Length: 136
Length: 180
Image 1: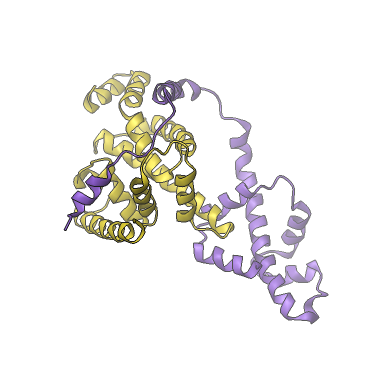
Image 2: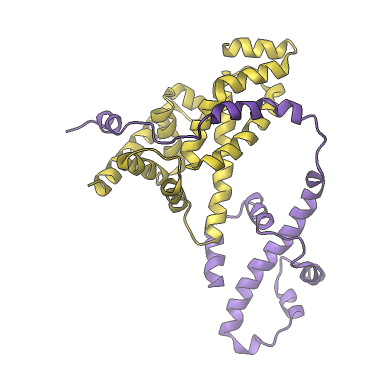
């Protein structure tokens, strides 16, 4: 019977390749980092905290809305509820903030912003999967 | 140039030259380290830029308590795990698993030049839990000692040996199941 070492050694290690001359090009680019670091931070780093805040609103809306939509479909009498009523139902969100966020929805909001918010907020995979199920 | 000489160069005020020496000595090793986790040349190339930017900005805080190369590996590993965590969330939002996405990348990678068993081995590694994947890759591919891995991952040698053992068992059974 083959030992662990024999099995892996018979398979071998090398399996990935790179374009020709890649490492010389890479070293050139990496060595210029200190030079590039002297450039002042761009506008993105100044805007980033505000975008993160906006993304957090959108994420709460997205998850809250998914849950509410599911609830509404099983209870027809609640279908006539307007946005103000939804706002009252979400304890996490201040009603006024909810309405403001509704007006904001769609502006400068990318999937990347939402993903970054979800990661930074430490949301678990289980919760994401749960909200996904609610959506379906 | 040895790690000690690089550090001395940095302390002597020649920061940029010391950084160039780090790039010269470690860029290729760290490229392969990251590539085995990300399974894509393009992703690795992008992430490596971020890793070396981090190394450059963190160099002033390197106190020399650990070896230079384990410190570099730690930064590269942490950045790689952060990247993979983002990929994991992205995959979850699309109702896919990260391991199946990484397996797809292995199949689609135009720079993969291994045979069918090597492809299977890489896929088996993607299925391992994070800690086992880290230990197996560092031990088998990077030839790092348990002591060095322990310093990089901040885990005891005993726990690492156990993780490596479980990883090899899982890989072996995966290879037996899927190889013809």
